[in-house]
Length: 315
Image (cartoon, rainbow, N blue to C red; front, side, top):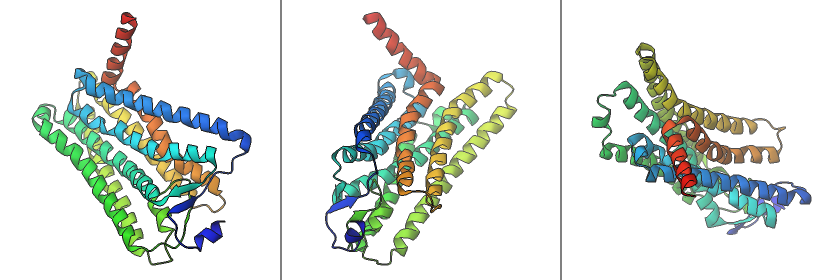
C-alpha cells in the first residue's frame, strides 16, 4: 500500500503510518494513553489555574512560567488524542489540512519549550544577580514584552517554515509517521528540490538552540557565580531551588530530543520504535513538567496545599 500511495496522485485524504499492535492490546493501550493524556491535562490546568487565581503567585516569574504548561498542553493535545483514536478505529487516515495544523502546533511546541525556558532563566538571573534592580527592570510591560518575544519568535520562525511548503507540489499521499511534521509533509512532494526547506529547517533548529541555550548558559553561570560569592547560606539555597526545576525540565527535554534524533541514525532500529520514541518527545515533558514544578517550586506547592486544606475544612 505504501508504494502505491507514494507514487500515486496527491489526495487530501492521506494515509498515515500505524503501529503494529495485536488486537487484544488495542483497548488496553488506548485506556492507558487516555489516562496519561487526562493526567497531563488536569495537572497542567492545575498549574495554570493556581497562577491565575492565587495572588501569592502574581509575580513576574510565574507570569512567565504560565506559558510552559500552556505550551505543554498544545504539544500533547496536538499528538496523543489523534494517535489514540487512530489505534482504536484502525482507519490510519488524516485530512491534509488537519495534518498541516497538527504539524504546525507540534513544531510550535518544540520551539516554545526552548524560548519559554530561556525567558524563565533570564528572569531568575535578574532576580538572583540583580535583586535590588529586579522590580525596576521586570515591570509589567517588560514581563509582557518577554512573553510576547518568546511566543512571537517561535511563531514567526515556524510560520516561515510552513510557508516555504507552498512552493512544493505534492504527488504522494502517505505520511511516514504516526503524526504529521514538516519533514513528513515534505515527503509528499513530487521529487522536487527541497534544499531550501531543509536548509531553513536546519537553520531554525540551530538558531533556536544557540539563542535559547546561550541565554540559559549565561544566566545559570552568573547565578552559580553569585551563589559561590554569596556568603549567606539561605541565599544560596533559595537560588538553587528556584533554578533546579528549570534545569531538570531543560535536561529532560534535551535528552529526549537527542535520543529521538539518534534513533534515526541507526538503520537496525525498527519504524515502530522510532515512532514510539518520537511520540515520547510530546508526552513525557507535558506529563512530568507540572509534577517537577509542583514539587520543586515552594510557592506553587504551598498555594496548592492551601486550597486542598480549605476544601477539606469546608467539607
